[in-house]
Image (tube, rainbow, N blue to C red; front, side):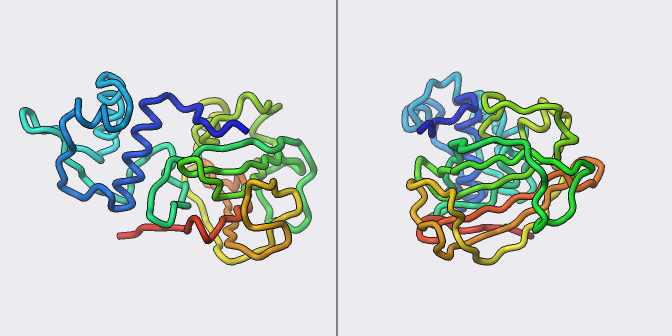
Length: 233
């Protein structure tokens, strides 16, 4: 199954470092290793690393001091690609990738809250990995009013990034309800909690840039491998 990320390498690096900063693996005020040393440790070129560092600087997560190096600036409101992705490995962080299980345009289910203007939605089922560890089973319902059609090959690792670039849909905020739930019967064998067993579950309503409900999702996560993390100041 494809678990490699379709994001550009520099964005993968940027997101990995951003999630490490959020998890406290890189501390506020900490000086990063010299660029050549850091590039070698990350298995990339200095040029690609510099693009990643520039992206982190744009987000306000790094401060570049001339002649001194790059310093971490931890903050909670950084707008990274995965700003709303709140599942982390138990040790913290982890780069998300996804395996698309199915994509269908269907009638909205009766047991879900109201969202969008259409009576149909695109139902996207995926298995999410963190650092190649299967951690989250996703069932995402995007209101059909936002797209005339969707194709599997169009979907990127970050749906919110895809929404923004291709559908002119910017997710501005989310509301999550956290609890436990039974793993659905369509769960693949790679997801450790077996179908019918209880595991962590959060349900999400996502709002567009006009504060309209655009999307509903159910997300089952493996509590032996990952946790839901929300950081506030």
